[in-house]
Amino acid sequence: MDTVKIKSPVDGSTYAERPIAADQAVNAAVERAKAAQAEWALMPIAERCRYALAFLDALLAMNDEIVPELAWQMGRPVRYGGEKGGVIERTKYMVDIAEKALEPVYASDPKPGFRRYVTREPLGVVMVIAPWNYPYLTAVNTIVPALIAGSAVILKHAAQTLLVGERFAKAFGEAGLPKGVFQNLVMNHAQTERLLGSGKIDHVNFTGSVAGGRAIEKAAAGTFMTLGLELARTRPMCCPTPRWTMPSPTWSTAPSIIPASAAAASSASMSTRRSITNSSTASSPRRGTTSSAIRSTRRRPWARWRRRASPT
Image 1: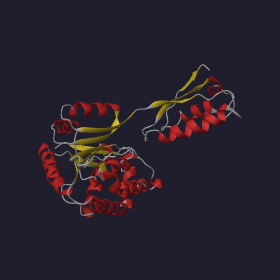
Image 2: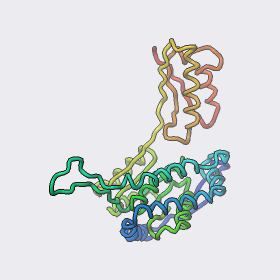
Image 3: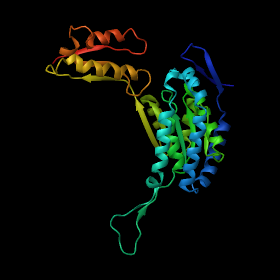
Image 4: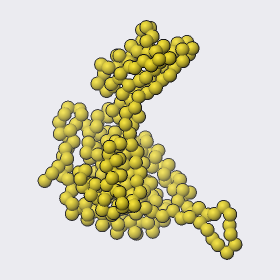
């Protein structure tokens, strides 16, 4: 049986290993989702929101276990306490705006004898392909609104953070969510592409690389499913600081570019691999300036920089 292994960045060991779902199990999960979604969509929005809040409570109750688990999976230091702050904020926000966001939109120019309006209908079966870098936040961003809107969700989490999917499934189970409305699957790339191309998925939301987005777009071609793609790649940070910046171009540039890029390195979507600044800033001879600070960060494993001076 094929498996997926989580190789921990902490010490290189295999932290967890899970079997890849068989094709029959994947197909069965989709059928369960379709059957469950039909009844789920008939439930009042307020009731669906109640399930979302119950899920949040169940997930927060696990946080003491989640924090070290997350560190072993993808390296986030335990001192940050996981991602519970953002998870709370985003889940509650979606609940707060649900009734207003999902209510019908009536025509602004009424016509006698007609009642013209647009209703918000669930998409159906939504597949969420979540990344490893912010595995709870990025998943909550799409799972919670999809469920509140009346869709069923199938989650395929990144191989590096497989246990996050299990935490979601456990929390929804403890919240009493109807069977089949949310399911977590361990799949490989080939299975994912076949499922997207089968026409059985109504919407996919993917957060990841540009190459991954292209593969998903290609797999879904011709199915008329909708796609939500948040794609990221490293880009240079351009800092065209003018010569006349006071008291020094360096002091206004370095405090911005170094923390912003180093903090995002290997984690956030806006991670940068090099900074581009004008020559007056990059070549400043003063100790502790942009150029010397950039050189110092080269010695740190979590930040790769390359200075490039451009003509002023």
